[in-house]
Length: 441
Ligand SMILES: [Zn+2]
Image (cartoon, rainbow, N blue to C red; front, side, top):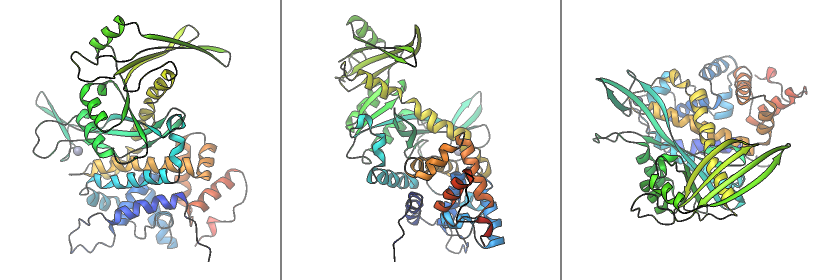
């Protein structure tokens, strides 16, 4: 018998399932819940994957009517739990359990050579942008892991995380990695911060892409000695925004030592663009800095005579006329993390939290991580599933695309992901599919 070749979607779901298997079952031994841990966690994932709080309810209705559902065919969920049930269980699960899923998907991206399209300059180098993001703030709603701030006797509870993603100047999609939560550890009265979280993240991350050179991209907050030292200790490179306001000694040195200038003019659609670069190697980061080999560069882009972009960076990579354009291009791709992850989290997935609640322990962090995970799964599909990419490109926007896959799987049954995509593509082209969902029973 011919062996069924697993699709990328099936492989991704399998990775999630395999990792869930080793999660502790935190329920009481006498709890005779009819749901398995796998069903509970995959159900939560399905909601984020389809970006819909009502998706499971419709699947439950479909099960009752037809004894089949997309929850079962796509994710292997036989019994669909309610949101309340899901919330109660995952509130007690440490979100760091999910890091092995991120790691396994990244390993798959390397093994299947998918990561290649993200390689910087076509060599074994990956650009990883990091950024802090704030995703909960309330005077009332709080949990054990909330950060707290007291102002005029009023406490504000919040959640933040350091998110990291593989970015590429040539590619709009980003590959999110497991975030590092900014949270107070037990017994530690001092509030945690973005910088501490970034150092913890660096330590945790260092084994993931062993064959690759890593270049960390970050904003001005990171271009100081503690983070740079921590980055170099892990043998990574960096290109970090370094503003004059936060590096006065360095900028004084730069102005006293005549940086090299390079001007490149291009014409794009009959419009003149001027790229003006300035750079200087071996600059002092601050007074009596112990770090040597710090290099500085600056880019200004002019459209005609008008300056449309400006930024400046420090890096450990020696800057020359040949690489200054590429270094600044890499540094500039940092913004994609804001565009790619954070906005999507805030505008798309965040509303789902209202459906689950904030939780007492981990729920809020777990859901935040799930949102990133579903983004990782979607990006992976977009990069390697030809039909998914085709459908995505047929839609007028990402929102429309999500609405379409959500709507079609809400009301119609599909025995597999491939059959669903094939049906949607054919329907969009006015063609008939071999599979008729109206006949499914
Ligand atoms: Zn909280």
